[in-house]
Length: 255
Image (cartoon, rainbow, N blue to C red; front, side, top):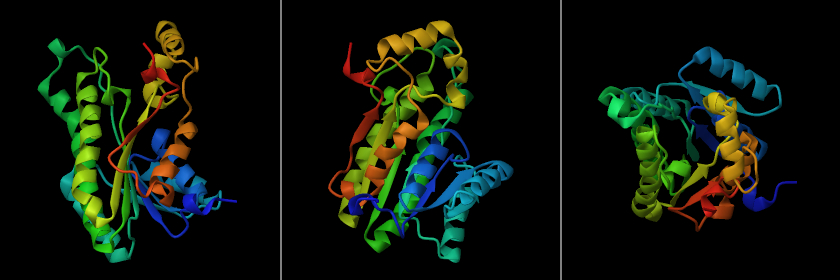
């Protein structure tokens, strides 16, 4: 039985980048807590497959195929939500990409693409969601940061800068939208078992580094982030805003 503070029944959650990976885990967690979820991605077929799988488990699932790097597509999607009577109560800004290259070899276009998808998109989608949330006097925004919201690592400069920006974007959202009844917080995942990290997981040296550096001595699983997301999306966190919670097996806490 769900504790009333964590019950998301009657709420609708949009999770960007949610046909697979961390986004799918966030969507499944929120659905398990009672929310109707809106899956997002750029591949309509993959979205429909994910939706059918979740619907087969008894969850209420919608889809919205749009590119988070396309401002006009974002505005059109929210206009469509309005036309369909879909009120987004919870937004999880999860969509993101990684690009690994030393800064001295990094092209400006590649830098900009990572910033656009990982940071600017969170602002634009967040702004459009918050406009509607403010009219209703309540809403929850959960931005997905990273360990690199706090610490840098070589060869991932644009990702590091974008995720550092997510931390401060979250604080800016909290500062500006708190009076409207909106709470904005972030999750900073540690090293997780995802498709994005497959090459790192399969690299014996990097795998050993992660396990040796993490007090829990293992990689995290996507579903282990769901509880934090539910907390930040629920009434249990109504007086929590502008914070980032690191779900990293303790990595950021140790030298």
